[in-house]
Image (tube, rainbow, N blue to C red; front, side, top):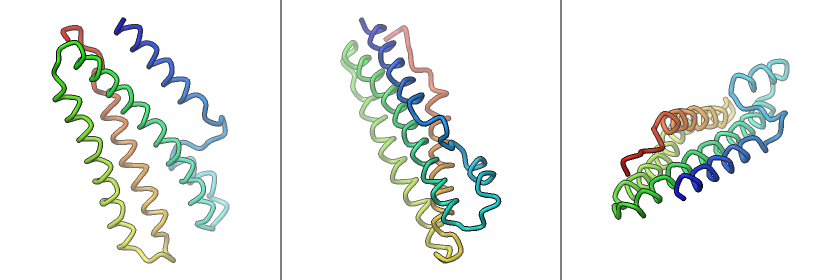
Length: 143
């Protein structure tokens, strides 16, 4: 039963990740290449908005997967501390990301690309969190 639910969650997660536009830019590097001929920061900013949207969806998928797994384990063993701590760690990450990127924004004049610095920071920290969550083993046979 638990394994079936996990398979369903994985299938739904992969479907969500594949549903985004085929033309959506998913990395900062692709934005830089795409906007290389256009010197306006507005086009780079719009491109980074798309990357942020993509990494937000991917991050949420990983958070959902780990939350689901920890909820299932808690139902079996009655221990909810790992689930509560995971939720707290995700909340703390969101706060950290906001504050870390905000100081970088504030340190740069708005006319000199403060928004680009913020968005780039946001993407890089989100990608780092995604990598960390994707490297965590999500199944444990010894519930």
